[in-house]
Length: 534
View 1 (tube, one colour):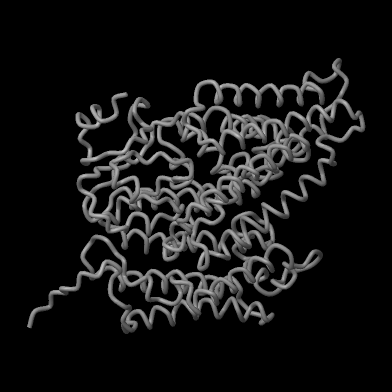
View 2 (cartoon, rainbow, N blue to C red):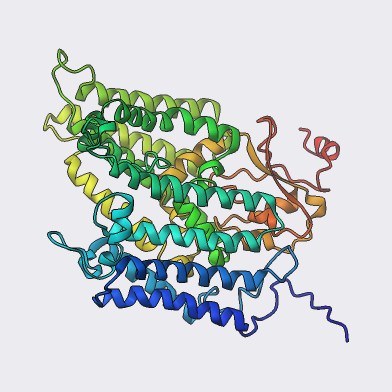
């Protein structure tokens, strides 16, 4: 009897029952979670280091074993695997349960850490107390809710990253970039900052201290990096702290633009960023849930660029608050700083409107003009009012508002908690100011694009379905048009799931990169040069 599956369904077959190995793997993973749950109910483990190790190893082993059994015996290639038939990956009952559970966890983590066992004065209890041995091993300090979160975050990217590699093992690009995000999250975001804390007060720093620094983060993600206490912390650490401060500034104005020019925003959003790393690995099962409508796209553009304006105003106000006014003592005074910000923004705006305006749609032009007028008007209001406040508000008010609304609610509670409801890149798409700035650079002067071979497209829709950023990739592919979108993070999944090899990620010359002309016959350039003649 033939074993060939002759079904032509593009969405895959309805999921079968779990195999024996998958059931055992699930049991092992839930055993690890059960230890954490028991700790949440203040069960006192006599050897916390041992039980924490058992918990983390069980969670990791269960996830990896489940993924191995799910994908290792399948042929390499496109994996749809009935995602629209599974409750958890199609906004079904278990999807909503997962969303509610994740959202609840983030609310407790950000606003009620005492329920996790955090004790201000004394020994930690509960879940945070369970993580004390690991925290003391790395940094020498007791655990906090952020250490617990960072540990779970890293374990999730590691375990689900291995699952992702097996799932897309037919695609070399996916394997390499997944290894990259695992490396940067484990090393730069988790281990190195903890070891830096251990160096505080050591002979290496001559008794100084280093601020907690995630080396792969840059402004505006680490918007707190330019607050007064952080600047003092850098400068009090001697040469090392000064180098870190200069590095933080260089990433904004030098490193980021150069890398984005050469490789697009994917160098950060898909290769380095921890938020993107979690979305790509743990959130991979939900990428098809992103809204592809034009309405969602318009909302996305207005919301994410409003966040950029918000963080720019907030950072400017915070830096302004601790600068001096005496020109004989300070080379950078309050007034000089505000004027410099206004000049820098004006230069950028003028450059875009003079040389790149054709690449903007009408509403994008109006939006840019509107935002520019608002910023300059607020700066002008400051000089005219003479009340000492900048942008009509106290800097601390702006900072707290941004930290609560964007740093906590949007990036955490909504951005990750709503994976099973709105897709895995909700934060990156609608709220991340870093993604918006890199997208702005990518659209205007990057060499990156996704080329298409329209003559080979069969309109299966896999590319659009699995685009986590809500881009209708198929519409570009059918026209043979290069995909150059500010929101594209260059994850390459559209190319990985294409059955015809229509899509290719490339870094090429800027000339002819953006061409919205309709293509009639695939990539027949000679024909189109005749059709498009005026």
